[in-house]
Image 1 (cartoon, rainbow, N blue to C red):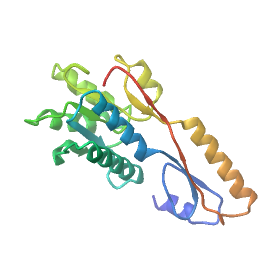
Image 2: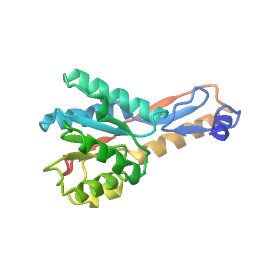
Image 3: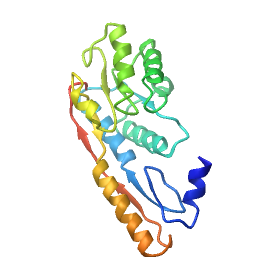
Length: 202
């Protein structure tokens, strides 16, 4: 957004969350390592055909998660066919449902699919139900974020839970420090780790 870019590069004290600007401080989820943890967990559960339905490819968060995904697969010696990596929109069950449809149509389909966020997993679950597939019997899935929805789904969703409380606190601390210093002389990029939330979908 041009407006956000203008704000980030202005003299106004500001802190970005989950996006890295060179001109202002930011607080980031550990997007790269979190994907590596998800891939490693899926691999430990016996999966070697792991697909990734990711968010918009031009976003900073998506680039970090893709890096983590590919690095983890390479470290484990897993081959990732190009058709296993599909773009969809964040928080959009409809586009994720279509992406899931494409994966299920493959002759050599994956056994596990990682999705861009927990809410979008509703689209995947809807598509799998339509095809009469069970989770995790026919396909294992995992989300991202760790929102309340992930805990009330049945089976409970396996996901990576971001520590949004700690991220918010860190952002306020950085913003306060920036205001007290009277400007943006010191640019700080702070990464806040989350944790794997084990459920019954993977």
